[in-house]
Structures are given as structure tokens and as C-alpha cells.
Length: 167
Image (cartoon, rainbow, N blue to C red; front, top):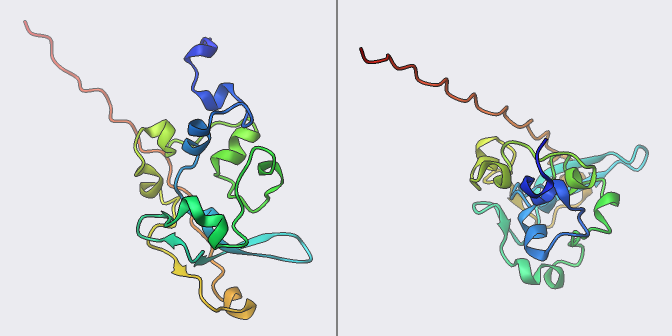
């Protein structure tokens, strides 16, 4: 069994115990938390649209003014260790949700893969797939509800190369 010191921080710390840098690194950069979602009043189910916050940079797949986002967007929700458990609109793949539920991160998460591009390669992100928030009213937003694809499975690891022994 691995020594706890050998395990990554997200497997040994709660969200509350994380440093600011650890907390920020949990974000995989998928951009789904920046999408406009609609809640069914009868069922409570959340439907994501392809409409992103006015500050969302679709090409970079991140907030264009992250430090000032809450001043500029009145309904921007700052994720905290205290509110993550109650945010039912966070994607099922969200690292904040996963860590709270004591689950591991997916293969494509940059902390696991070591590559910030795997979230895009795995088809998890909304990079280049959104339209900016405008003056759409609810009926217009309802037409923008999008069934986002499931993540791609982890790529197969190449089989080890066989070499012949020299005689």
C-alpha cells in the first residue's frame, strides 16, 4: 500500500485543507461552470446550454477576467469548499465535486495527465463550442440546451516493444 506521503494532495486532503494553489489547480479547464444552465422547476434537473458567460473566452476556454469576474458578472458563483457540496449544477466530472465525494480524478485531468490539453483531447471541454451570452430570453435559451458528449476513454497504453536478445 502506498504511503500517504506518496499520494497526490487531492487524495489526502479535504477541500478545506487545500492551499489556494492546490484549490485553483483542481480546475481542469473544461469551462462548463461558465455555461448558462436552466433548471427544470418540477424536477430540479439542470440543463446546460452552449451559451457561455459574457466573460468566457471560448478559444482559451477560460474566464477573460478571472480576478474581477464577480464584480463584472453579478451571478458568477465563486466555488468554495463550503458551497461545492450544494452546487448541483457542477458537471459530474468536476474535480471539486469528485474530491468532495472522495473520488479520484479522471485520466484527462491535467493533475493526472500532466498536460493541460488532455481535457480538450478527451472531448470534456467546451473550447470553441460556445456562443457568447447576449440578450437571449428563456425561450431562446431553451433552444440552446446542449447534450454535451461523454468524455473519451483513456487511450490505450502502447504495448512494450519486444526486442530480440543478441546472441
